[in-house]
Length: 137
Length: 137
Image 1 (cartoon, one colour):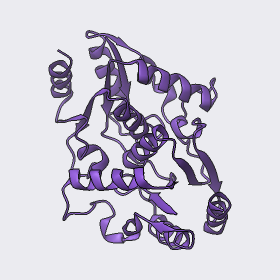
Image 2 (tube, helix red, strand yellow):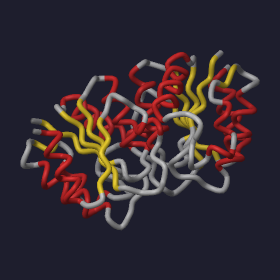
Image 3 (cartoon, rainbow over the protein chains, first blue to last red):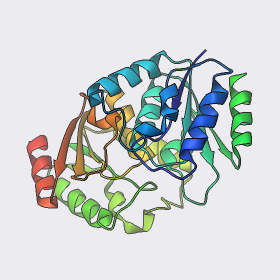
Image 4 (cartoon, rainbow over the protein chains, first blue to last red):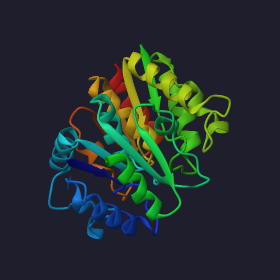
C-alpha cells in the first residue's frame, strides 16, 4: 500500500508538529510505503527543500499524491499546501483520512463539510494512531 | 463574468486581512459578479457562517467555484480552505490568479510551483488591483 502523508511545511506550525509527524510517519510504515517520509525531517520546516525548484517539488509531490492508495492528512494547522493536496485528491476519488488535534479553533468548512473524506479528531497521538489503524485495515 | 474570490476564513489572519478583502472584492465588482462577496463581512472571520452547516457551506462554495469563470485567491495567509479550493479549481482547468503580499515567509511549493495558475506578489493594494485588472481584461 502506498501512503501519502500530508502535513504543513510552510504554513502554521506548533511545538508538537515535528513530534506528531515523526511518530505518525513511523507508525504508518507498518501499513505500507510512506511516499513523503522526508516530511518528518525537521530541516524542511518553514523553508522546504532548498535544493529543488518549487516546480520540481510540486510535480514530484503531485505525482506521488496521484499514485497513492490512501492520503493521510494532518490538518491541525492552517496550510495552503495540505488544502491543495486534499482538493486535488478529492477530484481523483482518493481515499482520504484527515486527522486533527482537538481544538477550539474552527476547522475550515472545506474540510469539515466535505463528505468525500473521513475526519477524525484526536486528543493524543495514541488516539491518532488508532484512527490510522482502523482506517487502513 | 463570474468571479470566485477565495480568502482565509478559519486559517491565518493578519491585521490587514479584512481591509484587503473589502477593497479587493469591491474592486472586482467592476469586472463581474463576485460570488463570494460575503467573504468581506468581518463577522464570519474565524468562525464562519454559523447559521449554515459545514456541509451546506462546502457544497454551496464548491458549486460557486465550479461555476466561476475565474478564481482570484488571496494567498497571503495559510489556509486549508483556500488551498482546497485552488486544488479543486486546478483539476477543472479554471483560470486562477493567486495574489500574495510580499513577505519573507515561504509560500507553499504547491502554489509557487504550480504552473496551472498565475501568481503575483504585491507590495500595496494598489498594485494588487493592477494585477487583477491586467488578469481580467
